[in-house]
Amino acid sequence: MAGYAIVLSAYNGAAWLEAQLESIGAQTAGDWRLYARDDGSSDATVELLRRAAAREPRVRLVPSGARNLGAPASFGVLLQHALDRGERHVFLADQDDVWLPDKCARMLAAMAEREQAAGASTPILVHSDLCVVAEDLSVVHASFAAQQGFRAEDDRGARLLLANTVTGCATLVNAALLRCALPMPRVAMHDWWLAQCAAVFGEVHFVDSPTVRYRQHGANAVGAQGRPERAAAIAGSPVAWWRESAGRFLAGLRQLWELRARARSRSLAMRSEAGRALEVLWGGLAEGSALSRMSAARQSGALPRGFARRVLVLARIASLPSLRARLGDERAGGLETTA
Image (cartoon, rainbow, N blue to C red):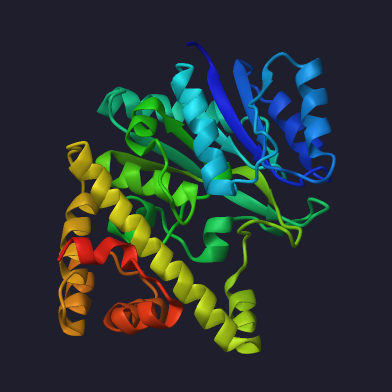
């Protein structure tokens, strides 16, 4: 199928949705199809999507039955829908951003270059930097990557196993990656799952300039909190921060279990640095001692770069059994199945 697809999951996004749809309509690469799904909104989102589909035949609504699945599962439905219809290249779109007019053209060019070099059968994810903006679209930070302290090399290998540097609304995937990643299991976040699948089974490519105005409005599902804001949140409520961040850490381990299970159930070759790191990391996590778990994490290369983050991750890996018990994590990410 010629052209490309965009998938958009919306939830109570009536205040921002029209601006996003307008920016999609203004793309210089005009041969697109938009598959949109409402995730059980209680505002005017559904009506806005229906009106958009009525006036623009390239907008196609995916029935939802008014069910709220949450962002990861809703995007899983949409991505499967696109794959089932033979789409070869698929962008992910959030409801509240504004795309730069050449976003799709630039990222498709990067994808074409990588597919020519590695082959279209290689799972590939292309993602870009973002410009962080306020609700009124005034610039907060010109580079999301710089604001977060990310480097381009962080998204290509082992570090994606323990921390996500890929933002869904700035992501393009090919069909080969979707065939690996779908159906989407229960994951911490869909963009992280796609990035991990690409890193372990194929490759990730970063476009080092913004293609999206990444709107922040206080109701973002994830958002672009900078380091000063994170420090203030920790200082303001350290216990709540600890529980929330520890819960995310355990969710990330469950996602790693799903990734390893996917590789084994489909006999997928883990041919990259990230794939080798996954085996090293998981082998250590399944061991009984805190020392062996920390040693495996260091050897894997999956630890974050920053000193404070490395210490925090190592501490959580060392105390994994007690962390699971305190948070009531009964499955431990499947660790008991790999011992």
